[in-house]
Amino acid sequence: MPVEKPHWKELFSEVVTSGLCTGCAACVVACPHDVLEYDDPPGTYRPWHVDADGGRSDCTHGERGCTMCTRACPRFRTWEREIDVHRAGRERHDDEVYGVGDVLLARATDPEEAAAGQDGGFVSAALVYALENDLVDAALVSALSGDGQWRAEPAVVRTREEVLATAGSRYTYSANLLAYPAAAEGGAERIALVGMGCMASAPGVMQVRKSGKIARRLSLTIGLLCSKTFDDRIFDELFEARYGIARAEIVKMNIKGVFQIWTRDGAVHEVPLKEAHEFTREGCLHCPDFAAEHADLSAGGIGADNDWTLVIVRTELGRSLVAGLAAAGRIEVRPGDEDPGAVALLRKLATVSRRRWPESADPGPRRLPVRPG
Ligand SMILES: Cc1cc2nc3c(=O)[nH]c(=O)nc-3n(C[C@H](O)[C@H](O)[C@H](O)COP(=O)(O)OP(=O)(O)OC[C@H]3O[C@@H](n4cnc5c(N)ncnc54)[C@H](O)[C@@H]3O)c2cc1C
Ligand code: SF4
Ligand code: SF4
Figure (cartoon, rainbow, N blue to C red):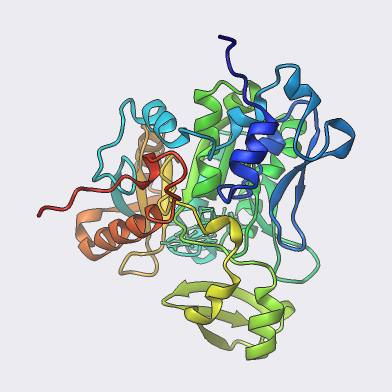
C-alpha cells in the first residue's frame, strides 16, 4: 500500500472547514512554497490557499509530496497524543485534564515588569531574562497596532523595552506565529513564542512531525491560559454601541468575572461577560485546550491574588527557566498548593474546554477522568 502523505487537501477538509481550525497560522508559516495566506480582517482568522496553485481545496505541491502544512497543524488528527508523548515522554492520564505539569504562583520582582504585566508580569520577566541571558534571540508576541486603536497584532520583540511595550492581554486573536518570518529574516535562530494554547501546541507538533527549520527555531513556548477570544467586532457592536466605550480610548482590559475596561480618562468600565459571548470567535468554539497544554510554561490569571501569575511548569526547559529566574531574583515564587481554589478552577475550566472537542474528531482531547460511581 502506498504511504499516505496528507497535505493541504486533507487539512482543508479535516481541519480548516470542519470547525477544528483555530486560525493559529502554523500551516501558513510552515509552508515552504508560500501558497498559504491568512485572512484576518474582518475576523475570519483562517488560512487559505492561493487560487493560482491548485485552487482553494487542493495544492499542486501537496500532490507532489509536500506535507509541511499537516505536519505543522496542531489540530490535525492525533495531534494531542503525539505532542503529549513527545513533550512528556508518555501519554497523559485521563485525570490530567490540564496536561502534564506542576502548578506554581509567580510574579516579577522588577517593578516595571510587574506593573506592565497583566497579572504578575511573569511572562514579561521570563522573556526579558531569556533575551538578556542569550537563551533566545527574539520572541513572537502580540502588540497593539500603531493606529491608536486597541487592536492586537503579531510582533517580534528583541529588547526589554519592546517586551514591556507589548506586555498585558488583548482579548481578540493575535496569530503571533505570523511574526515568525520577520524574526527569522532578522537572523533569529532561537525564537520564543508567546501564544494562546492553540498556538502553543504548534512548536510541539512541528517538532514531533519534523517540520524542519521552523521546528528547531521555535525553541521556547510560553502559553496563555484561555477559554476563548473574541471577534474584532466586539469593539463596535458591544463596547461602543451598548456602553459608549470608544476603541481609541481603551488603555487596558482584563477579564475577572466581567470585562473590565480602563479608558484614557481614568474611568473603569464593566461589561457583563454574558453579553460578550455572542462575539466568541468561531475558531474557539471547539477548542479543548484551556491550559496551553503543550507549552514549556503556561501562564494565567486565575489565582486569588491579581498581582500573581499562575504558572504551569511542563518541561525541563520550563523548569530551568523558572529556576534561573528565581536564582537571579527576577521572580518570587510560591507553591500552587497555597491557592487550592485556583488549582480547582484550573481543573474545572480545563474540563469544560475538553467537552467542546467534537465527538466526530479524534477522541483523545475529550478524554476525562472516569467519575467514581
Ligand atoms: C485572549 C486571552 C485570553 C486569556 N484568558 C485567560 C483565562 O481565561 N484565564 C486565565 O487564567 N488567563 C487567561 N489569559 C492569560 C492572562 O490574561 C495573562 O496573559 C497571563 O496570566 C500572564 O500574565 P503576565 O502578567 O505574566 O503576562 P504579561 O507579562 O502581561 O505578558 C503577556 C504576554 O501575552 C502576549 N499577549 C497579549 N495579548 C495576546 C493575545 N491576544 N494573543 C497572543 N498573545 C498575547 C503579550 O504580548 C505578552 O507577551 C488570557 C490571555 C489572553 C491574551
Ligand atoms: S489549526 Fe492552525 S495549522 Fe491547523 S489549519 Fe488552522 S490555522 Fe492551519
Ligand atoms: S479558546 Fe483560546 S486556545 Fe482555544 S482556539 Fe480560542 S484562542 Fe485558541
